[in-house]
Length: 220
Image (cartoon, rainbow, N blue to C red; front, side, top):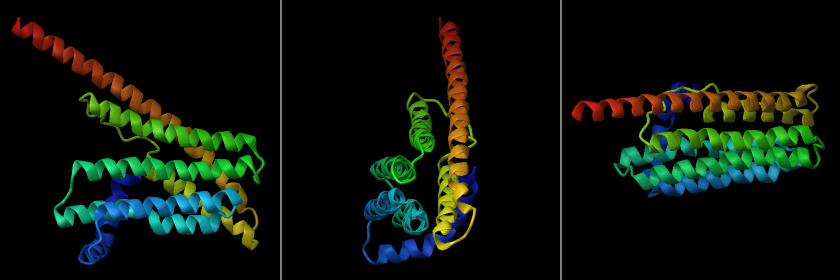
């Protein structure tokens, strides 16, 4: 849902910066790779040590590369299947690093096996939610559904909560509970979204099979 409305806004905001990078000879693929590396560094260096505020700051600086690279490709007229594939693949890597970082914290210094498991579920369910849409489209279905918690929602909810929870280290009381709450919300929302997509694919596949059968009967 957020992806539908926020992407257009941030695309307009980041268009001048994308044009600047193109003038400097930077390629969209380079931005994709650098952005993913930055997100991974922020998540896997800071989060496992419980430094959520600084980790979120680093991730936020790089996460907008997901909008900039596509913007650059469109401006330069070099949009390609390879670019789309690379961007989508590295999005999954970055998402895995973020929730993997949470899991490492709760498996170690955070000392909470339940939240470690919830973090792992968020990681896995996010990958599967993305896969269901890609697989449905690969077999020729539109997968026409806006899920409750898609990638944009997962990132915003978890990173905002992590950044605020990180303020606990600066003496702000009570904020450390925000990350566990956010992880539970993402976990439940991802499960609901997965269910929505599975139901949609089942319905669309049944309709497509029925239409194909009717077409065969009409030509026989």
